[in-house]
Amino acid sequence: MNKKIQHIDTIIVGAGIAGIASAYYLKKGRPRSSFFILEALDNFGGTWYTHNYPGVRSDSDLFTFGYSFKPWKDAPIATAKEILKYIGETIEENKLQNHIKYNHKIIQAEWSSREKKWFITADHTKSRQTKKFSCNFLQMCQGYYRQNQGYVPEWKNLKDFNGKFIHTEEWPKNLNYKNKKIIVIGSGATAATTIPVLAKKAKHITMLQRTPTFYRTSTIGTEEIASTLRDITNDSDWIHKIVREQILINQEIFIKRCSEEPEKVRFELLKEIKNILGENFDVEKHFSPSYRPWQQRIALTPDAELFKSIANGDVSVVTDEIDMFTKNGILLKSGLELHSDIIIAATGFNMNVLGDIKFIIDKKILNLKDTITYRGMMFTTVPNLIWTFGYFRQAWTLRAEMIANFMVRLMDYMDTVDSKKITVALRKKDENMKILSWINDEEFNPGYLSRVLNKMPKSGSNIEWVHNQNYWYEKDIIPNIDLSGEEFIYE
Image 1 (cartoon, rainbow, N blue to C red):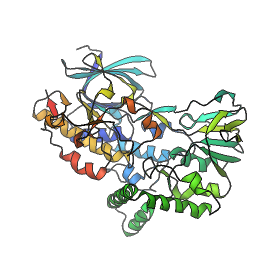
Image 2 (image 1 turned 30 degrees about the horizontal axis):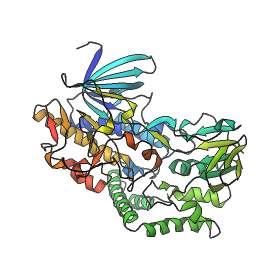
Image 3 (image 1 turned 180 degrees about the vertical axis):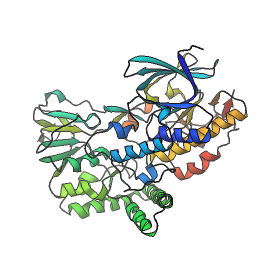
């Protein structure tokens, strides 16, 4: 073996919240196994490190977004700074610091069946040197979108605008927006987060949306549950466990209702908004989407802060389509021109497919779209790789922890059967199943997903080949997967 290639048992890609969870379980479950994390950035945290727009915070409660093994002790919704502190504590408490290699951006991953190893090529972004590694197993925890590169539609005459144009994912340092007129394009989670904060200093903000978004104005009683339990005991582990379980139950009931009685849920969500904005505000036009609740993500605005900003006159809402940019702002298709000093695009992100890494399997370039996913964790024809992809409707970390435990169990089983290579393949009973899109757009269809669906793996009509989005189903299924099943090919 080339001495310049450093070999290790497992490489985890990404030191965000999922990568740190995987490192924790790998160290705990396989203490004799060697591993490290390759992180492209110069710090841990992923999203919570790169996103710097005003007010950046979680959109999920930290009792479920946080780790099951580390109690969350503060308010359910946390700032990026608070989340980074929490992840940093996890790293320090579990002595994971020396397992992280920062500034390593992976360019290529090549699998050799002859050697039964992955060979990794990474750019060291500080030294600008190329680094080579090999590993027996690869776990992808890199997240699902490109950091610091937001999605910007192809708007006409964007360069004509004389003011500042910014995407929330590329927020500049020391932007002065005091007493400025601002247009925020978009109405999803990011817009709901940043608009109320911007409104405190800006002269006025216009939230410009093409179509409405559903909103929640609270965390469904989470704060009250936690507060009540803290009056009873100071046992943070116990409080964390009880609150976490109650939130999961509440979320499941709500998600189920969104599917079974969508119009009732729609009425309830809009009623909350009408109570704040009053009967004279056109809530149906601006806040009643054409899709059912949870067919796209429901944005959170804690304590109804977005709607309070609208009610007090700091924020206006315009539902229209952009015709073109002008030197003073934006001309809408209705003929209305909006004037602005700053235009902020909160228009979502670009998904990456396996971290935008070039994958090669036995000298053939991997096209993920030609594979079928095994329970959203593995892919047909791709050996010794686990993909960590969380839930759309619930906390990402819930699934990340499940998958981390599955990987440890799979590795242990491979040791038992003296196997160096594992792939998944369709069984005899899968030969005639229907091949479907990765995610059913009737179930979940946000723009960022629709734009990249043709590059994603396929699903199958049999349940093992579906990327499931139901925590209550998977929490029992994934830990009990029969690793001796026909779908697992050991060599």
